[in-house]
Amino acid sequence: MQVLAQKQLIGFLEELAPTSLQEGYDNSGWIVKLNDDFSRALLSLDCTPEVVEEARQEGCDLIISHHPIVFKGLKRLTGQHYTEQAVIMAIQAGISLYAIHTNLDNVLYKGVNQSLAQRLGLERGHILRPMKGQLCKLSIFVPKENTTALEAALFAAGAGRIGNYADCSFLTQGLGSFKPIEGAEPRIGKLGTRSFVEENRVEVLVENWRVNAVLQSARLAHPYEEMAYDLLSLENEHQCIGSGWIGFLPKALPVQEFLDLLKKRLPATALKYTPPIKSSIEKVAICGGAGGFLLPDAIQAGADVLVTADFKYHEYFDAHGKIMVVDPGHYETEHHLPEHISALLKEKFPNFATLISQVNTNPVNYY
Ligand SMILES: [Zn+2]
Image (cartoon, rainbow, N blue to C red; front, side, top):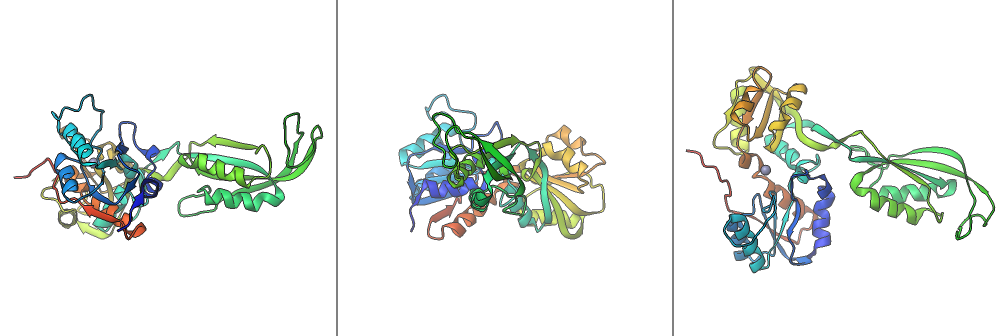
């Protein structure tokens, strides 16, 4: 089987779900990093001591979990708490720990909610609460004849993507001027003489987490010693980044049938739900894990139902008369994730060994 450098393996996961997209309270990314190469990864929802033991028995050197085992920080490693036990056991067994949590929640493509939507057979969906502040506008001034090469470099580094469109840019023509002064080593023009060059202004959208790579790539393709550019943060929402998901069932289902579908497809043992507002369900908002904060967004978007977990008693009242809420349980809305991440890794690295944890980490029982 294939041994993967962490740059390949984690690079792939972080291209899918950049760690900068995690929520402020989260601790996604490396929790324990003991190696630079990995030969066998165990995928799990939680990283409990039982899961670490399973990884040890299976000869894994890496656990990729959705929930980070260390969430609020550790002050000691005495083995008193299950978090400490898991970390100690992992270090003793030479197993690295990596978490891909709210950053995977916050991406549309191949994220937590899209995979949940596919499991439920939902379609025609988009992000329920798109995130602001993740986009920049980059404008670069470049001589006319170098424009195509510059654009190619920008696109290759991931600039110019808008939804399902790639290589998007806007060009305006103009006249640039400059005078190299002492210390300059101009590739065009002479010291002390002002030059005028026919230039284009190339404008592209760049996601925040790509800015450094895009600028580096642009500099390599730009003919000037000093590349003139503007980088502006935008207030635009990013349509592919944010919380929750909203879409449709292929056809409206009577409420009872929709509840049956949830129980069967997730699967879930029991559903907690508020009174339906309609006799049938078609427009469905979902959020894997604790998504009660999306209730106003789901109501605003006109969803018939919000399916998410961890509602508190009084929060159910907020839905009254406006939307139906179904809470199948936190574990139940996310336990498909190890399989989902494993499938993505297998597609990218067919010869890399991934195992799916067989441990049921759900701390909640139903009777
Ligand atoms: Zn969760």
